[in-house]
Length: 104
Image (cartoon, rainbow, N blue to C red; front, side):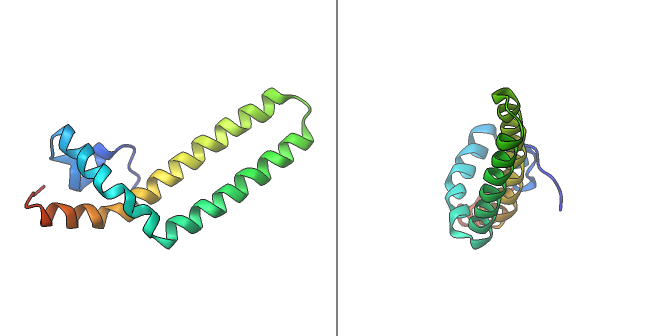
């Protein structure tokens, strides 16, 4: 699975102007919540996030450590969510481009 670090690196959107890229992304982003893969992933990641933070909270007395771990886990969660979103949305982007007569 290829990793995409921004919507600029998605092949279907790479050749489009910046404004067009974001319009198409916004139009297709709602499709992520129609996928069971995404919903299951969010549930699993939320459970893991809460579990790890609970363990850290009860292990360490310092709030700053819990906050630091929360920030790191949140960044990892965001990255995984973005990768899954792109994986799910790419077919919808292709469909959107073909139905609106745009080529990449």
